[in-house]
Length: 353
Image 1 (tube, rainbow, N blue to C red):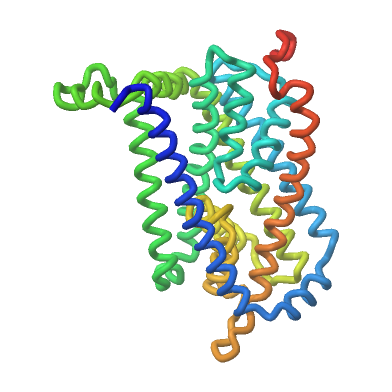
Image 2: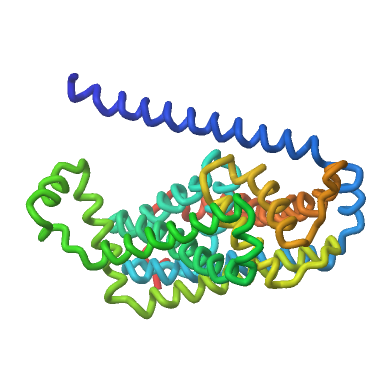
């Protein structure tokens, strides 16, 4: 094959795989929505929505906004580790823009790509380091969530392991925790250039390994920035507890009798499930997961004969997504104004601290 034709063919294959996977996820999403839709009494759900307490919904929306602010602080800390210095207002804007694209693109990482493009404009000489901040932002958030979920499930461990689905989730959490911890230790301490002969020879055959080595070098900067890394972890803990509090407020708004620890267990596990690339944006999976968790924890009771009782869990899921969608739309407005000012141009020198 002629070398000039190689990249276009590879790009076409990658694009074909992307759309094929998108079609599969779309089919899964529609199937789950159709199944849940037939099981729900929409008149009951509408009546429950009309009886919602708007005050608690407003508080929940405000708390979710706070979570994006704290997420911006976390990302700014990670940017500083890589010697990329941006004002907080710029980082907040890029965080909201990322949320907008995460909500309205097929994949859940579309916003990360857009954020990476912006960072490459601000710091063109440190593109790989900017990409590492986005990877670390995701990784630390997921790692903290897995830790919280593992700690929270121990509270209801006996009832959770009796269910096949939640037992599988608990095992998956443990496996992911081990993989993330082992991967972090390996990337931090294993010197790739001093590997034994066979692994070293295999490593040399990996395509574009120079990019991987640059990313690894960027990751290892956290060894000399332990304090900043711990700040990012603390921010992640704060973010999740703000999100759990927002979920608790939504439950109060629709008059669900739920303890805060029950909401912590539910949202930690559901957030982990919808982070997996199963359906588009977690739609359908999110509703089914809330129904399952609310049933297991005794928050709702489903009538075995009529199937009635799912409505509060589905309403909770829809409201949770709707409030996140509000902030996604705010991100869209920020994108429209931010793009004309700084988004597509390399910023002036005075934009950095």
